[in-house]
Length: 519
Image 1 (spheres, one colour):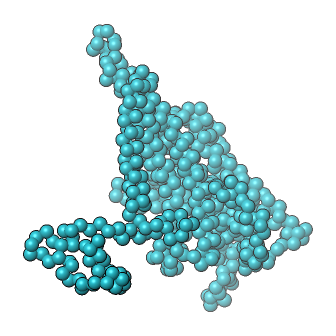
Image 2 (image 1 turned 30 degrees about the vertical axis):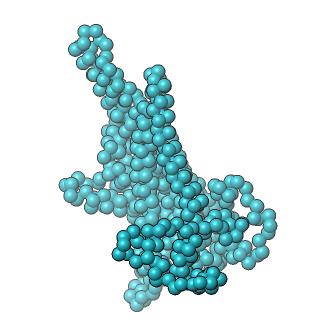
Image 3 (image 1 turned 180 degrees about the vertical axis):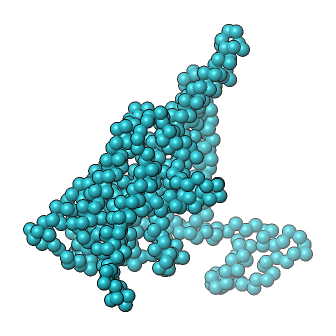
């Protein structure tokens, strides 16, 4: 993959550094396991077993440390989200298959990537465990020390090799500043936790241990449903009606905040990687152009480039410009899609609160418990993969459309061929207009001649009922053209009285045929 080349080129740069980030990731498992053991020893197990009564050393210690509640926790949402953001660089390593701790054959690379993912998860496990532990004083100290280690090593790595071979100046800073910002936020968060836990330990502040069944915003949402809506609440601005309406009684859970923050940072890193690949390809194309011009100059004594060579150079220049321009449009599309995900999540959750499931496929109305748990665990990873691949596909498609616009509109004007371009454009517009006009004419004819009148004058459109009451019969439909075919009037009773004939026709609609004959 091309992103793998970028990571390799960045690692194998000419700059000499004493810090190897992959080697540090391996060694970071040692303090990570130490922190997990300490927090596990402090954590008490919920389920008491008979073996615990015989063990004087362990007792009911060594409980499982819950790093994060993915189902519905609303505490420390942004702290968990920033902790996810600190892992973005390593997630991109895994996504680009650039991080492989073991050298194995091709068929076993999936297993190695799984082992690498487990290693990355364990190395960043203390961030979440220290944020969620109930023993705030000890967990804040351990979390601060572990975050400080990561922050210090990353700063030293950036200071020793700030530049790179692809982007050039401050390439390492461009890649690592999101992780640095997240680690700095975690340092401040652990300091705040330590100060607050120390005040509680010294008795300067009372710890609030009450945990209600409903969150505060959920209780306010229920109160809002019980109140009568005001008339002013129905008046919404254009921004609220078309773009987004803020709801103070709704909060996104930590899994959505973490997934969104991680998706933003991974999208940023993916765009930087793509730009690095673009820089590498541009360099190769410049070398190709130089070699091509040298070859033409050696073959042609006049040194004049042929039209084919000029067209190739023009195509390369157009592709470069369009690719750079569409980076911004594709990025804005994916960023808007991330916000659209959050808006749809809130809308769907509110529908589920009301018991509405019609927007969900039938097979997902009653999912099994195991499928629900697995879906929650898969959501973040799959969503980030969809965002990254979606950006790449959108960028390629927009680039193709940009090249078509350049060759269809811009280049003809530059080459003084605007008249031919306008002539072709006019023919195309005329053809499309004729097709659209015929379609509109079909609708008008169907509404005018083939539909019955409106039932009520205030109706917006005519009813779906064909107007088949217009007599359009000829003699051959009533009496066959051949001599042996019987006429319809032979089967109708003879009515001398016109009034009786009218009443019978109303009772028997088939007698209308005889009225048509007599008329």
